[in-house]
Amino acid sequence: MAERQNSMEVVYEYLDVMEKEVTLRIPDSPTIKDTILHLLERGLIPPKKVRNYMILHDFDKLLVSNEGNRTHTFMDISIKYNLTERQAQTIVYKDRTKHLPKYNVSY
Image (cartoon, rainbow, N blue to C red):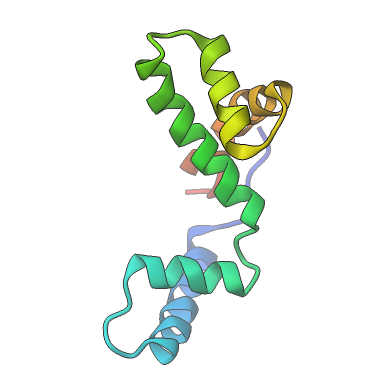
């Protein structure tokens, strides 16, 4: 795998900038929800990424409640997020690794 563009130096600088922006917006101890909302509104987190993360989260949770039945789990996900079952499968199988730190940051 090729080295990622985001060195830790850039990540820490970004964190400092975001901390200042969020604190200016919400001076009285902003929460993580405030920070995520700020990033969404600024376009730094695409809404599709949030949806895909929630699909992965729900998939793992629903798989347990569906007693390991992937077919029923993908049907439930597709209904909840208004997707085809194939789209839900693609998100689960291809996006799972994209949410790992080693995929996004070079240490």
